Image 1 (tube, helix red, strand yellow):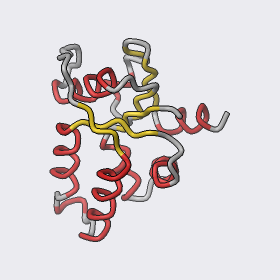
Image 2 (cartoon, rainbow, N blue to C red):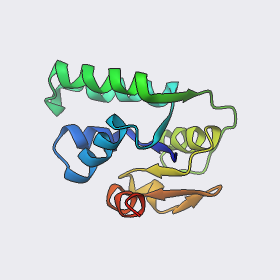
Image 3 (tube, rainbow, N blue to C red):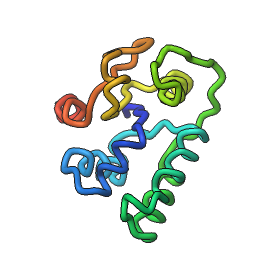
Length: 134
């Protein structure tokens, strides 16, 4: 089974109605990949989900957090990475490397420009779905 670090922007987009991100969220529900997550990414997810400007209801937030907690393999990142322009993006790379992920799925352009990091493919949601359906 493929191990995947999913950037939080994918989950947020799924809850906001993105079709491709919604499919990835469904794949997680169906155990079609192993989610590799870290405490830092989970904390950021909680923080962003609770932004009033997103207009998410408490039930949607609770469901995503419960699912993430149940399905994810939480890893402790031991190697620091410092290559991203936006320093907050480094934690996604650290998580993926620490969990030996096969993919990083993100909508973040700074991460996507890397294309690959230490053998881990960095793809957007539509690219991931094309690869994953093979």
